[in-house]
Image 1 (spheres, rainbow, N blue to C red):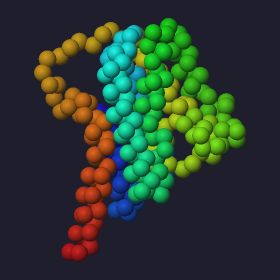
Image 2: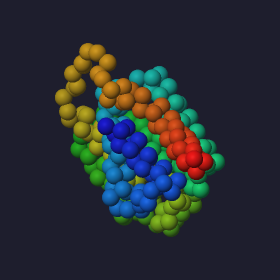
Image 3: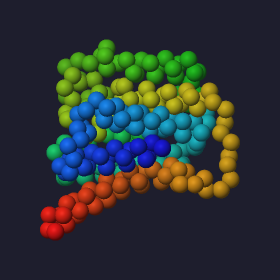
Length: 219
């Protein structure tokens, strides 16, 4: 469902960005809450999937292969938004997924109390540690600058890594999932192909909307 929510939000954002609607997608608190809830769900599921995929011991070959794909996709998003958008995405959801996947590895075998404590500390850190000393660009992934660079997509380590740690803790506490035969339907397909949907859906949506706008003007 997180991938569906993401497509809905980006479609609404594109409509607003292209001037096809007056929805305040980028500024209204309700829209911002929707975007944050969607991003938080993705990052929570990163923690859950790490536990279910690796247990307490990392299967390094598939982990590194998946990490390389996500990192390359994150770099592509940065390059693409630097070309097409006024505010490039330097540390968006894909950058966060790649980074948090690495940072979460030690917590796969950590005590639950330590995971929960670390999640709480990461979550409150921006309210405690934000300081002008973190303004330089190389601190940007931390999220502790009082005036970070503007971006359409920004999920820094503090506080967003807390969502991934919460996912690790939840998966560790939950009973193992039961395997279900068969493909699992449309939602399962969306889950298996979420990365490619993330990369493709925005160019497709923008192309369709820009094309529709051009046709409407000609007609």
